[in-house]
Length: 420
Length: 133
Image (cartoon, rainbow over all chains, first blue to last red):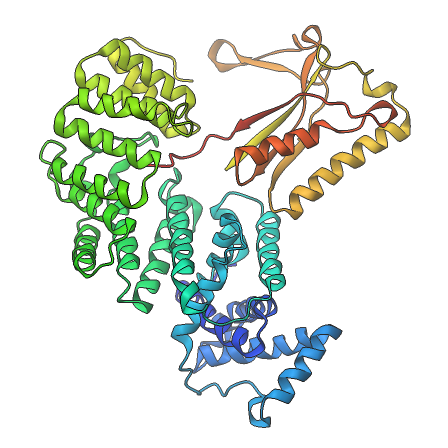
């Protein structure tokens, strides 16, 4: 469907608000979600021809509300619930709110939706799909295209997720304060997953139509607006901006990776870097400091350096040590080893990597072999570097990484090597 | 994460007669099983694509010859006694899940309803890098 981009933007912005109102009113997220999808469809077909209604949000709520009543009437079990709702509410509240009525709770509704979509009972992929549709206002077809799966597959994922939420019996309201912190962790994880999916895509945003990285940044920005005092959410937004800023320089014309050292820093997005740096600078002293803030601080040091040589590696190493204590993982340990090499030389870095070789998660991982290859190259041990680059290339399941690693090995070997 | 599951027919690894010698009911049970697998994958939101392939008699090997003109040969398929019977592309949570799905597919029924236990190769589909190098 070819909709006016302005209408599309407006619908995306209003979708979570309308969904929030209907879910809260009926206490039934799954049905409300269906009703909102139909209201959006009606708007997308009618608005471009009839013009925008005076109050688009009120229009959507009314259409969604009417559809909701129909859906609720459709099933006997639901009818009982409708009776309950009717008996509980005074007569004057049994109708959809007037189009010009101010809705005070919409800001909280978006947050509740986010918490609901990042339900602990959902698998991460399901939570991602549901969040993009319910909070991001994307259509199932758009989400399917972005993840390169058939629309029917994505539709099943979303309806399964809704069934899970329904069967969990979780009411549509903010989780108890005690649970809120945990759920917020899940919300950030889901947003970060959306971001990584978009950030690592090889195809350009025009081809995919939905740029997931941009969508993740938009949603995280909304989260930051709703919770301006939550420093970890600010850190996550900063991390995304600082990472995405390097996007244009990160791959070559054929989609091959360009390592940080070789990137043309003039192509980095200066505005995004400035915003990210400002965010993390404000968030860090406010505390409590979490892993996203620390990673954002590391990204800021990379982004602000004029070259690899002039990068503040001692500071980066110190931050990785903080990160390792806070949220240690083999990947963090590996990054710390590389920073160690930049500060104390390749031998110290390789020694740190040796300790990782016993980690079952890391032992056969291509990232360990790739890091080792880089450090051996740094140390001037060409033969070992070539062998490690080739090992890493054989182990990765990423096409651009495989090309990059194969080319590194080929360059060192100084003889043409057939690309796989 | 996407995986390609390749069902190899391998005369060396299996001990059942060719499918054109099975009874109608046996063939029907086999096809029904494959249909169920696809329905289950779709319901789980894991299905991306799946196709059965024509046998080696219908397959061709193509190479570019002089000036890019195709040079087509009909083999060697038959001598190898091994061919690709079909494939699935699934999008699932973990490599363990992909192995689980492949094992299930491998239990497709053959003569007498016994599982064929045909080998199924599991290949990760090449994707973009997961992290900054």
